[in-house]
Image 1 (cartoon, one colour):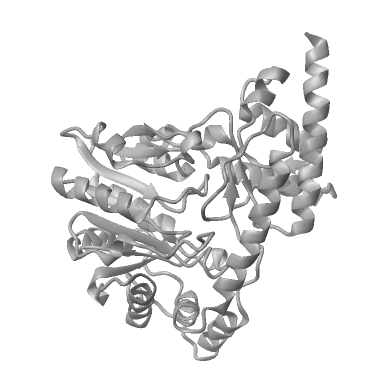
Image 2 (image 1 turned 135 degrees about the horizontal axis):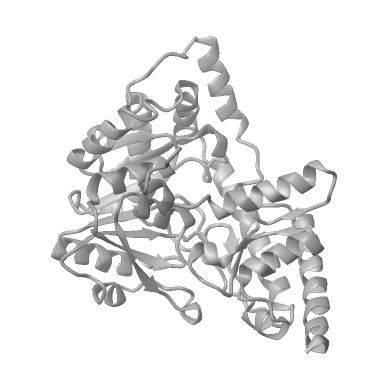
Length: 398
């Protein structure tokens, strides 16, 4: 069978590949420290699960409106207004099957073949594949580790051409945990207005900010035509498997996205929508508890990585990832890149992490600290021992 040309433009998610390899080892009884999955290790709060159970009891198991039930759309705009000071109405909200669907639908709705999409590097793995699949041309904005991977409007402006149709930002960032300051976000939106392109702001990790940083969203601006907010309940409420995301923006764009959704997934799962209403409308204590625990884990893993010879690590400002640089280890060991490093780590040390090539850089790896303190300590121990074995062995071989 001959496959389409467009399907060849994309690859299997590297994150998923790591998860599958780790799961295969675990299934055979191997003890793997899994730093690969970008998924909270906390259970979905009980009140949210009970809302889903009640929806089942009430036989809320039929089709719903494609773009989500009104009750959920109201809950989304109300929660966003309370947390970020925005003023969206229900008609400016679309519920999707996870945040990824909102991103896919938006790119497909605005990008024609050859249109340019500016992506800061490191980028989340799916951004570039979605752009490629849609026929767009990724224009990569290199950020600097020494500046904590800062995205700056003046650097973005140098990449803008007459073909620029979209800028995608993710703050806090997956994979680096970097946070774009509010004033810089406002400058990015001003660029979008001035040059007539769309700014997509992925807020998947927006509630996980460290060191007292206040919550912020560009949704608090009055702009609708040049801005699309994409969000998800997956990380904020430990609801990854429930698959509920959303988009906030101009009704004209949301209408195009809804049209695509009507011919792909149709509506998000009915009972998941009811659970999402409870997540957004009920007490938010679980979010604060997760943030406090993530902050403790961040401090532990940054300190532990900093103690490993040849490894340096920028301190993440949000999310639950670190993005350490193993460049010196690669140089001294003779390993080609972080992909080979990740393979060796899994095979020899039984530590699973995602190589930086998946995010557009060669020397880094992504480590998720959405796991227990005990597993973090064990993973750091294995990493340290692996590096100490690896570098002398290669030095002697030379």
